[in-house]
Length: 81
Image (cartoon, rainbow, N blue to C red; front, side, top):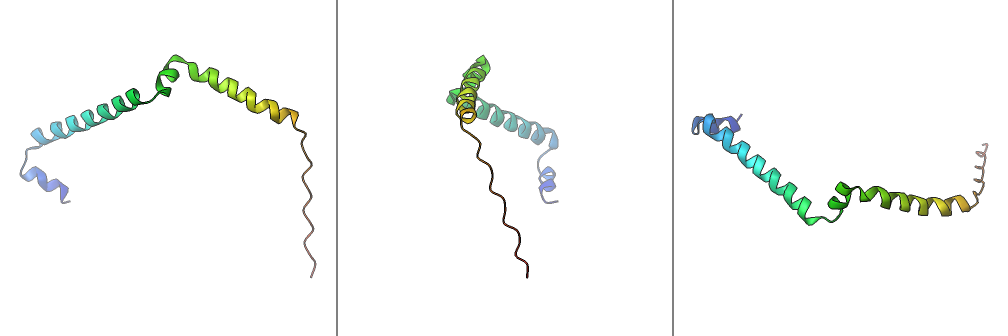
């Protein structure tokens, strides 16, 4: 394991906390950018998404209910050789 050789030069007591802090800071910065640069997150947290989905579901269901269902054509029988 070549990656483990770094601990021959740097103490694990120093490197492990630094690696953890870098991971945490990266994660927090990604989450902050997603929360601050999207418009749908605020609506999601406020519960506004459920109203929009309900209206959209009704709009999709109405034309589907009004359209008659056509019978599916039967498949042709296999040709006998």
